[in-house]
Image (cartoon, rainbow, N blue to C red; front, side, top):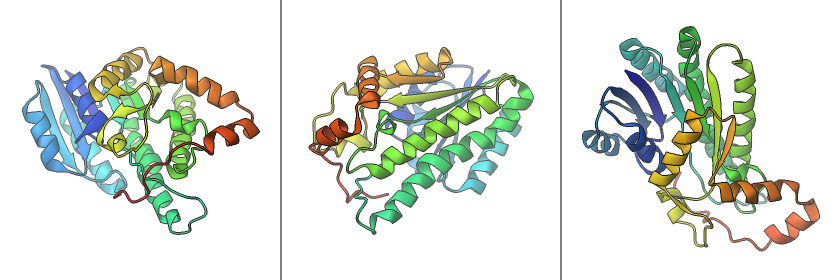
Length: 254
């Protein structure tokens, strides 16, 4: 029996990952804030499902869900910390500091708490993969999306440290940095999104990278090229280009 846990599993990429991994003989733990979409998702897929309605920023609830899952099924073979939020921010507006705090709570500490909740059981079992979903937005500070860029950059460094800490334990750590994926999070963007992937296609490619136990994978490959260029651009040139970039809406619910 294969055991998988996915956070942010009610819609978008999380739901697509659930569809990708669903199979007879597989048990999948779905974690997200909204219970009804997860139940509807699970009812139409093969395999067994557990639904845990909680916010990953609630570390106590997350730890309890992990204990319940491991007690019933054993240590997971795969945990995907996918839950994430995004909103437009402006660094000179003090009101946006609260947005930054919330984004960091979900995208960084929520990710860390998810993996930490399952890591001890996986270490004891000497196997499995911990995966965190970051973003190509992590590679430079995107104007109008400072909170999101900062959170995904922090997630990459946390995952990198965790990977090294678990060397020799049998537990792998995979960092995924997607580009644009067609989900409710991106549909609010009022600008063209290059190399846009459907959620199901992104899940398929992510699944392949996880299966290969890639340390860090940028998806799709075109975005890997773009991110490589972004990382080496001198500051003065990046500033000139990025200053003209469109911005994410700042009035989104969190």
